[in-house]
Length: 214
Image (cartoon, rainbow, N blue to C red):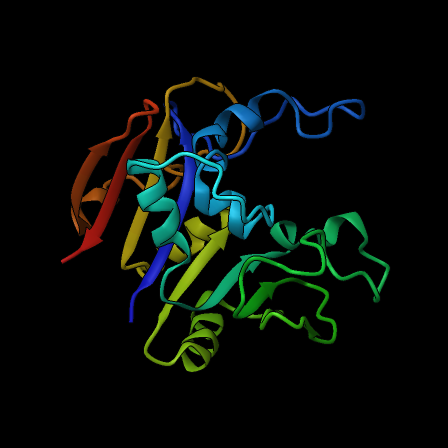
């Protein structure tokens, strides 16, 4: 079992964007930041429900496929679930639709716990107010001999990295400069010393960095 992280980041290390407006809620930078990942066959099938076989292959597809492989449980922050959109609606089921792509137990870290939400495809959202260590212990118990993924957001990932709980960190470094947002490396000076680094360029111009604990 391994604890894994996969994130899209810019050349300057940002994994979130700040150019959203009411008229353009995703902004222009976010689609650019995730363009290579969103173009893969696996993303189109698992996230968009497109089973036509459309999408890119090659190096980006290899990593997109690995993203979903052997995951027994996931941990994410309240923002990734989307609780900030409907904080007072106990019946809201998240912004992932009726078939969330996780197909495994998901532990959502939040200051306002609520009853679990179960979907037919095996996704179950559990809402916890707890520490990274306790959340990981619960996720590990659910995952069995499969991996646990720390899905995001960036602050949650940094908490797990600072606590030394991540075995493998995969970054899709996209060839663009954003200039603002949440940077993955803030507060993590020297963390590369705890890992072995592997790099692999993709046809899209993305560079895949994998930090693997010895």
